[in-house]
Length: 368
Image (tube, rainbow, N blue to C red; front, side):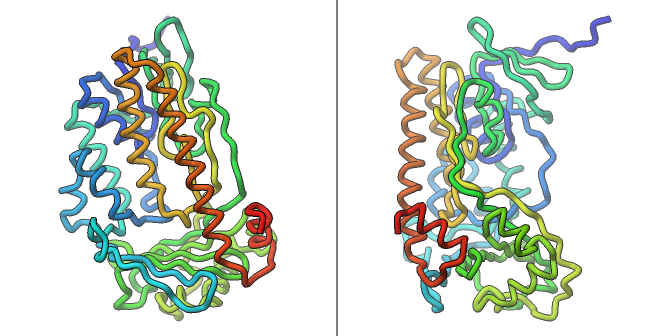
């Protein structure tokens, strides 16, 4: 007995429900395409690195989401502080820039806002996971459990593994082994009066990031290499907390008497990677599936939105018969990634105080 559901058909399937996938779904739907956005629906309550640059405002406006993001549900971010290359803190004030403040995000709410915008634009948003993709004459067949979807195009927004892009012929190249060991600290573990800014501080084995979150919480994360996590036991709450207390500035945002056992750590890959090529006949990769960067660049969500919009425009142009639309998008991703690598080189060159493995590796990579 055949229990397979009838095959669904649409113009484009977007696999992945984060900012990149939602941006692509909104943009393609507004171009008049029939779009299915497949959201895995199993995301953590918080994600390491919750700040959004004010440079995202024009992109959010284009997506019809700016008003909801700026309605006060997210905590404003007025700038960032950095103790990098020296012990004192430098500060960048967003209010002095052209776009005003950014945001410290409630990430679950932010993703839901974008998914709702995709629905309003006309996309079908469904929960599931695209398991396989197969090229057939003139279309793709994508499987979700017992169901299949037939589509002329697919967009991979599945994250840095770029699982579907690799099935279509893309190759993922990783440049380092960076990981984040992060905690969402409860209100009782965060000092009162913490400024509405992000803070970065370099230390012996890597660097730290912290930012306030809505509800009085704070994200605190240590960035280091995967092998150093095992070697130094940074994944153990007591060791992580000890390293946090050894910082100069990040610890000043934390109540030092907060109980270590209440710190729940999440280890997440944060390596630099790029998919070559980021598009091909009938498909494109967006967000981290196209280009994934070191969090020091503070560009993850911004790039997700930008590549989602640009890839959707390229798919629309390709469907209309414009030559090389998808190739041009792939070339643009290569350029974005190359520009990021140059900026990362300059950033790490700014820290010369330590000769530990983490910093020695970055000096070797940058030729310092």
